[in-house]
Length: 331
Ligand code: KG4
Ligand code: ZN
Image (cartoon, rainbow, N blue to C red; front, top):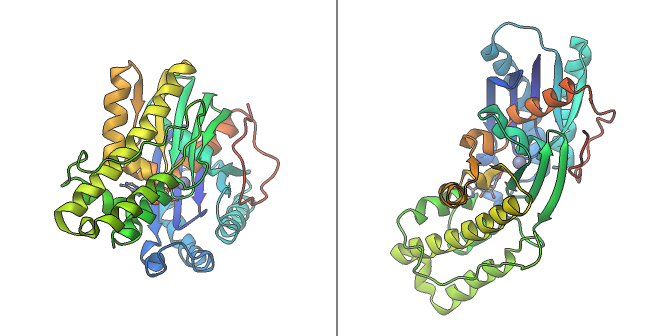
């Protein structure tokens, strides 16, 4: 079965075709240049850009996938920004109606959990870490459609912490890739920063770490420049990566997970990927890292999650756009 997927929940306009778990095309048009001057995603601008970009993006995804009937159209119905979600929902439902096929409203977080399945044969139960600008969720998945959110951030999302620290250091938005790039030249042991553990809980907290960087810069403003800036980036990145990796692996052991997967924009971070792999394998866990284009927002994961529901004959009744949609089991 071939599913056309649409993703418009935030600032990437994407369309993809997935056939029985195999990627046929995945076109992503990023709006980052549009939002950069505002240092964040402006919802109204994002909605308008999705409207302008979606048709050409869909046309390219269909052309690249080659001939073949589309059996369903999956779109992101939440969580995300209301205006951008509505654009994808209306487009998805209209296309489905014209094609005479089902429209499937997909949870964006389920897409991130299942993205690794486009490249790996997953073993269940698994633990998934979803880390982006808006989310830091630790999920136990007993199978496709069987989810339990174990923990989440109590304050800033991991990507938000990256973006805020980047701003303190005078770096461009989004800050994650900038810090990642500078950190490669720095010493991760140069600055001693806290690893917020929240013992006894699967939740995370990153605002204390961000504040620690702020205080450090007040005491020693020279850390915002040159070599010392690279050291501070590396030290911050190490603290974030260790915090995320240690809790994720502890959860994987506690719940008997066979595989560990990651998703979301921060899952593109080079240190997080390397450390998860290294420490996971040392504990005998298989760490499945999706390609970076499947970690950041993309329609391939939406099409794939839609296919999972179609195959299980559990197409959701509601296609209502919901900015705060929670991840729930359906199987
Ligand atoms: O998933 P995503 O593309 O959009 C949503 O937030 O939904 O994630 C964007 C976030 C931004 O906060 C960005 O700074 C972060 O992901 N990010 C990174 C890297 N690439 C993107 N953070 C750390 N290292 C990276 N290489
Ligand atoms: Zn996302």
